[in-house]
Length: 269
Image: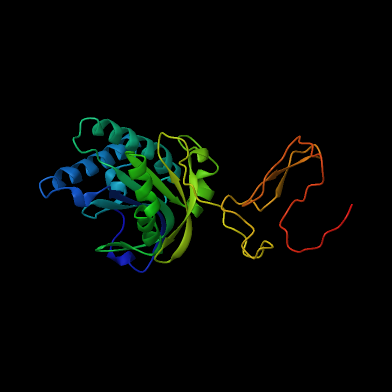
């Protein structure tokens, strides 16, 4: 490996990859060595298939996972595309014969990384580890019973994923706001081999608009009471909120009052 302790004060922009195993606490002491062996086997097979030499990357053992940094001379798109594809395929095939299928949470971010004789550190490392350990990544892996979930930072999505490329399809990623130790960030999630995951985050209501009743006008679906959906033909359709009703193609035989009775004024036609 090209890094040494003399580089400790110098930050290099590298791809940081955090890999965590699902439910590692549920493995017995006798099972954990087998789990770790499988993690290393799928990672190293994927590196070989992607044409990335094992000695070309920095790898740290984390007990129930691995922390990796990849130098800038190796294209990030190769890791995001081919390497992730090979990792998923190897894991999927291995899990067919495992009594306890291995699930992995993988997160990636590019940023300044500092190396010393003990390993790597920096905000880029913290962010990658936080994404892999996030509740969204954990929930997706469990809910979908998937072999693998990938999380990437907003900057990595924008600069590498969004343009697309071989084995990289931006339409298969979905964004989510998550809270990490350093604050709230946006991350993009993918279940390799599947459509973009449904993360189900509601639209936040507007804090500046209130209904006549004094309650927030925006509902959880992001529409206000009586909000108009234009159809481009000059007509308008309305979405009803709270206690509103929608009537279409209806003829009323007498005057109809729409809204709340808020006074006692009785007008005659």
